Amino acid sequence: MPDQSSSARRQPNVKARREEVLDEASRLLNANGVSQTTLQDLANVLGVTRNALYYYFRDIEDLIFQVYRRSCEILAGHLVEATEGGGSALEVLQGFVTRCLDPDHPQMAALNEYGLLQPAHHAAILRIYDDVVARLSRLLEDGAQSGELRPCHAPTVARTVISLIHWVPLPGGWTAKSDGDRRRVVVALNDLLAVGWAAQREPASCLDPIDLSPLLVRASDGFDQDVIAQVKRETILVMASRMFTCRGVDATSLDEIAATLGTTKARLYRYVGDKQTLVGACFARAEKIYDYIMGQALMQGSTAMDHIVALLRANAMAQQHKELQPLRYGSAIGALPEIEQVRAAQRLQARNEQYTELFRAAKFEGSMRDVDLELLKQVMPGGSAWLWKDFAKQQSEDFALVAAETTDVLRLGLLAT
Image 1 (cartoon, rainbow, N blue to C red):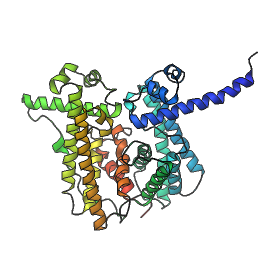
Image 2 (cartoon, rainbow, N blue to C red):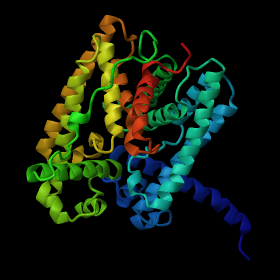
Image 3 (tube, one colour):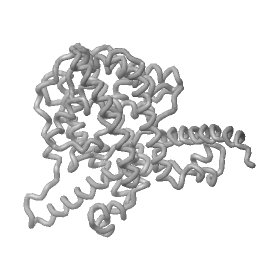
């Protein structure tokens, strides 16, 4: 007769081991992305054989699904715990953020390569994610009704807060090197969520949105073969940029891009070139978009605050626009040749310096609070990172509203003015 007590003792050990495996998998996916993570990498970290991992995962897609599902479940659990802890709407929100980013709690994986999931798995992840968004939205709406929080488009703000939570553990220039550093980041983020970085918490600026239409490549003459070729090339770059962003470069083949476009790999070669050339072209296209937006932003309004608001909103608009959406650098920079990686890093550094000058000018003119600029620059992109993922599937008429709301979460904070 089997020893039932012995079996019962083994069950917690199996569960604990599975959690350990998923913890390490989350860290690896956050640090390296799916393209640079294999089951063998995970086995090496855990000190086991690759075959041993097949007890937990069928393949890499199953690994991604289980990690993402667990991350969403942890996210939901932290929101429930923060709500049950009581307090004001802001205290619950800040408690939620603190629990999610506590270094003593399991690390959640950002949902960056969701495009690799099969439809059923993608839908399962989205159900949990949408439920957390709905619960957090109700918290924000209740806070606004009570007069504690400022009125906002709650679903957009909820997605922005979750996006920031997912962003913080990702590698970056400010990456916390210790638990103390992580806690400092959490304190700073909660402060921004309360009162923002703007010195005067005024309503959204009335600046006209930057016109992004000059960046669109469309045929005005259906008989001009050169123009038609440009449109076809742009169509390829748009789709490749989107797929590289949501799947990773290494995990996305030319055959898959061609199939999604309903064409052939030969045509991709004809209009762009091989995969390495395609990646480089997507980077060049992104550079063109970002340079244009920066140039236009510097002509908006008359203050550094005007320039910053215009810049952030236009970037958020571009991220939502299906015909414009630029490549997300972090998803592809490692796929460039070494010399191009150096050049890309130099261009990123130059853009970082432009942001620094804008923020310093805002501090000088008194429109920005005395906040940690380096931390702010690194955290700020996380607020709009969810727009690349198209989770909300907003329509074009919603783009401006969403762009303004994602910008104002950290600009104004959430407390009522």
